[in-house]
Length: 230
Ligand SMILES: *[C@@H]1O[C@H](CO)[C@@H](O)[C@H](O)[C@H]1NC(C)=O
Ligand SMILES: *[C@@H]1O[C@H](CO)[C@@H](O)[C@H](O)[C@H]1NC(C)=O
Ligand SMILES: *[C@@H]1O[C@H](CO)[C@@H](O)[C@H](O)[C@H]1NC(C)=O
Ligand SMILES: *[C@@H]1O[C@H](CO)[C@@H](O)[C@H](O)[C@H]1NC(C)=O
Image (cartoon, rainbow, N blue to C red; front, side):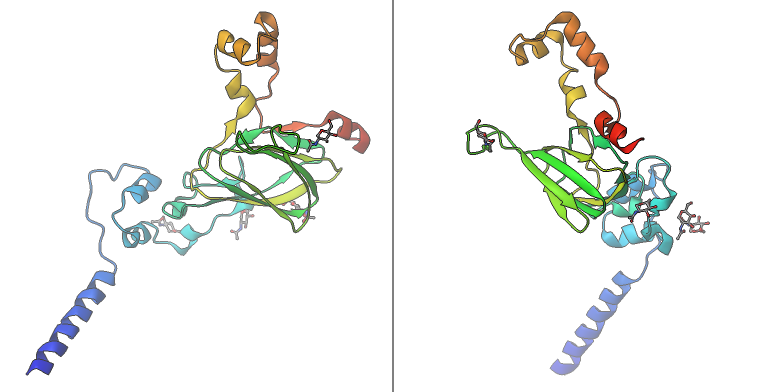
């Protein structure tokens, strides 16, 4: 009798678990006018997130199809919600440099698949070189090599060659974001910027610097352009 009860319980439990694993209709919600990304963020469980992504093609991002930034985040690829990662597949044109930037919410793993890149990264304050000054980590990357940009570190990449450098970059946040360091620094008021530079730049000079800072992620390296005849 005891055996019967036990096995009955086990069968019941199994049935209950099985039922819980079956696709359930998503209960109607007043927030259905939210974006898919927002709905995925609000989902109670991963099971509910899968229900919000019914097509197998929801799990594919086509980098050859992007017209703007070739970066997949939870904003343009909802399937990344809850994954905690994002990815980019792109190329740095010949003779170009990515503007000094940082990612406030993610560490970046930057892998070069073709070409050549000179990478510089500045870690946090207190990381010093042998001369007791701020350490700058410079690497010379070729195809098949990967480097690390810890979250918040300033970094920049130069492609010094006459051909494009193709890369894939992975980020440890589905919404890693970018900080354009120079533009942000000069967004402070004149007094703050002047004092931050020890009074060495003032007034008109400051305005000139503000106006000259590129707004793009990629700038061209003039010397190289001449050398490559571009
Ligand atoms: C699934 O894909 C089909 C065909 O591409 C599309 O018409 C449909 O809207 C998609 N369904 C959802 C829920 O995204
Ligand atoms: C990816 O997008 C490109 C450009 O729109 C298209 O030509 C290609 O067929 C797409 N690839 C797949 C596998 O859908
Ligand atoms: C330290 O200073 C010396 C002399 O100025 C310089 O040659 C060297 O490159 C510096 N080392 C580093 C790691 O910056
Ligand atoms: C680099 O990427 C471009 C664009 O996707 C591609 O046309 C080219 O073949 C790639 N170069 C190499 C050497 O893989």
